[in-house]
Structures are given as structure tokens and as C-alpha cells.
Length: 325
Picture 1 (spheres, rainbow, N blue to C red):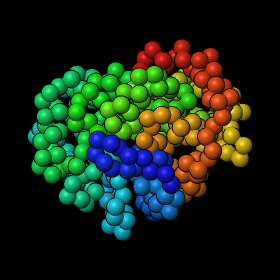
Picture 2 (cartoon, rainbow, N blue to C red):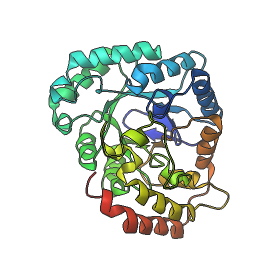
Picture 3 (cartoon, rainbow, N blue to C red):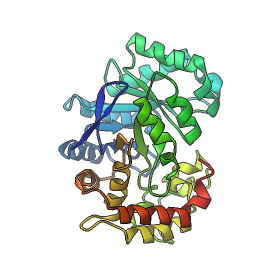
């Protein structure tokens, strides 16, 4: 699989990675043997980049990956920190950073974390010199090799990119969330900052499998966070009203590339956006992993398809999300 360079740290990531939120919680229960099967299928498919967080299953995702790394060294593992405490800028201190990263190091079984991302912190955090000085200290101490940010808004991303130590920005980017194309991706490319595209299928909408009456389990964030009750509403269905999303996804399905599924087409659309380093779809089973990874080998979408995706966004999605994030 193609790998792309994060210039600021000289590290490469597979263009299709694996998001592992679902291995911890919030998508319904996953047995560890099933989680390991997902990881094995990912590696067999050429995936070298894994994304996790210290709060996914209260560390369960990290722990499963850590046990997997014993037999699969060399993978590029990015984790996140900052949501083990109230979302208060005062909590983003060096002492807390040390405690959080030490916990992740233990969970993952490594001395030095490859990449630690601030996990969608409050907006003032991005403008705090003390926060970024503390992150630099973690690098100097060998706790982490590099740091980045996971953001909710484009303005947060641009503020982080301006920091000389920021290695990567993780941001929601998909056919239903196109605002990052305007300023964030060009700024990241110019600065040598990696772009990690998350929520690439708009919580599954872009797979084309869901209907107006589809029901999700009670532990699934697509049930309990539709109105932002637990965390930012933009993380669930990319902030798009579910019924609107279902209807727009039906149109997107008709744009699928020959021989490709709608989900693969959605991933291919992201992969070919200039400035993207890696896209991190989740997967609940090995077949989903293999299908996602196969998107890396698809031919680029033609201009006519790109134009149609842009038109679909402008007509159906832009009024709901473009001004918000």
C-alpha cells in the first residue's frame, strides 16, 4: 500500500490506516478475539498506521493494540490524550500530560509513544504557549516521539498548524464535510504537517447501507449522540441530520466508481485530496478492513465524479455543516 510522509517528523503512514474507536467502546461491544482479527486483517492488507485514544473503552483499545504489537512491531500507532479530565483549559498541564502519557505507554507496552494528539481540547488550548511548551517537554523527556492535535474546527486546525512542533492534524474530512479543503489542507501541505482524515464515512452514512428506519444499539453513539448529548455532534454523522444524510447518501451511492462500493468510493475521494496523509476508517470485522484497504488501489475518481460530489455537498449538506466547523 502507498505510504505518505509526514514531513515534520520524517515518518510515513499507510494512506489507509485503521481507526480503533470501535475496538474500545461507543459502537457496541467487540470481543477481543474479533478485535485482534481486525488488526491482523489490517496488517495483512498493508495498513501500517493505527489511531487510538486513551479513553476508547477506558484504555481497552490501547491495551488490545499493545498486546498485538508484541508480535507486530514497527507499526505506527497514534494515540490521544486530554479527555480523562474535565474539558477545562486548566487541566492541560505538564503534570497531567505526564500522567496520561505514562498510562498510554503502559497500555501500549512501549517506552516512547509514536504520536500523541490532543483529543479535541477546548479552543483556548490551541493558543496556549504553556500547553505546547509542555508537549515539547514530553518529547525532550522521551515519553513521546511527536505530537499533534485532533480538532473539531478548521480554525483550530489552522492555529495548531502555525505551531512549529505540530506534526499532524486530525480532522473530520469526507464527502459530507468538505470545508477543510478550502484552507486547512493547503496550509498543512505548505507547513509539512500531516493530515489524518477521520469520520471518513460520516459514521457509516456514506456506505449507503442505512435507511430512515435503521436502528442502532443503545451503546452506539449513533443512537445516543445524535443531538450532541455526549460529545460534539459533528462526530456523529458528521453533524448532518440523519434523514438528510440518508437521502444524500442515496445520491452518493449512484456515484460509486465501477467495481467499487460506495464506501470505497468515499475513501478514494479522500485519498486523492491534496494534502491528505492518511484516512482512518474503523472496521468491525476483517472483511470491512480488507474492503477499506482496497480503496487505496482504486484509480483516481474522474473530474465528473468529483464535480458531482461537490454539487451534492453544495445542494444537500453545506447549509447544515459548513458554517459550524
